[in-house]
Length: 188
Image: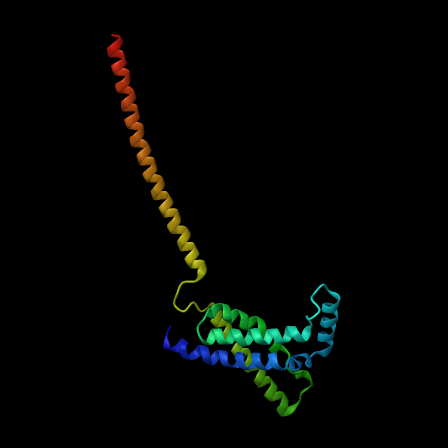
């Protein structure tokens, strides 16, 4: 891993770990943003076949814990692309509406817009992390190369088999011709 990645990954992961832990410990922060939406989701969950312990608060807490865990995995370079995808999935929704910007004015609006842009920058960094292959080919590229190598090996093996079959055919024809000649000599 390059020096830049060793430094950048923990720096990029730190806010996600912090927010994930805060969300896991205090899910009310997220729920208080849109209480009507969370209440509606809670009623849908309670009417469904979901287990009794499952509610919006639990889902928000689990989402925060997953974000914190994914941030730690990303910072320590353990499955970094998968961790980046998990970070993107768990935190982009949570950060989308932390405060009602349309209700703010003045300095508070400026600070919230700055916060939103900072969050957008972090999400952009995570998007880059999702596609970062760390100098190694992607899974798709490796799969294509594996298929190509397999096809080449199969074609080579087929040529070998055809060559052996051709030589066996020649030997068989020679043996048949010899047997016919011996049979004709015995009759004649």
